[in-house]
Length: 386
Image (cartoon, rainbow, N blue to C red; front, side, top):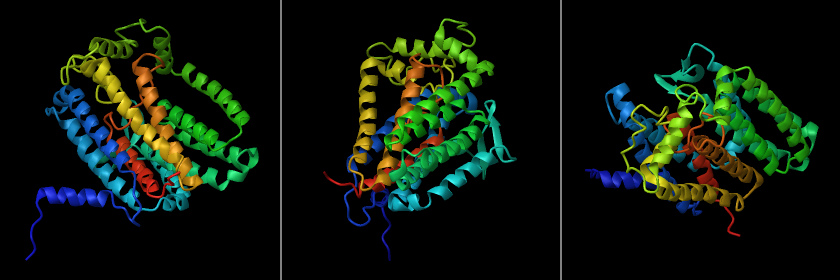
């Protein structure tokens, strides 16, 4: 007769499986603990920021919180467990296949299973659940570029062998995302890819030329789109049309400013009462600053960026070039996305619609970030200790 496990024993067994050591090498447990702390804080912040909009739209103040937990964190931790158990070389060997799947998914967005929401076709409806392929492509592209730069490390500065194929691939992915349209994600992938190419030892002159050409292209994209041009005008003049195109950034800055030194208190935001748009998504940092104030928000950011720094440290202990390039790519993704989100909320750059990693609402983004963290965690088992 078998004894039934208590719920405490089940949780312990789950986490023992989640952080399985495999061949006996010690993974970076500190990084794992930091990840759990960030996830818990993110849920707390989301529960507060989304309570009003969840009740107004779904008659349940914890609706978005529960979706984030079950479809983002729970599913993401399963992906984390899988990717942390699989040796990272598996992803290197299957990099082309993984990216090809991502490109196919981007194309399927424009098919019958694509969903049109918020003025764009960026989601797929899979078995009743919405999924954003661009979030998968971010991780798949990092894997592919890491493998690509590793295989061409001796010719990394070659235009014909390395840079030209890299440029063609990047253009293909970016064009598919711009067609959705999603200029924020397209800009992020360009910045991420250029950063990876540079850190892999690429030719700086090629990057300067690409940056110049890209700037011209994005200028025309902004010029020929009224809402993008409006965002730029608001950035240059925040007081322009505060009840219209300038409403979002003005409300965000009002939320941050009203937080003061110590904040209004967790759960006591006023801007979340249908004043500030996207309180659970792109604007969640403004709600955090309003409720926690300058001191506690600063402490949170210290923890947040120390978590990123801990990831970066692994790059210097990576066992080979592929793992090193993957860590640098994933680190670049987190840094670029975080800075673009926070700087936009502070009015330092135009609004980009960029979520805050591990914090903003978005199950697709969170699940794929946790899958990427699983690969990072697996690499940490083989890190050198110099």
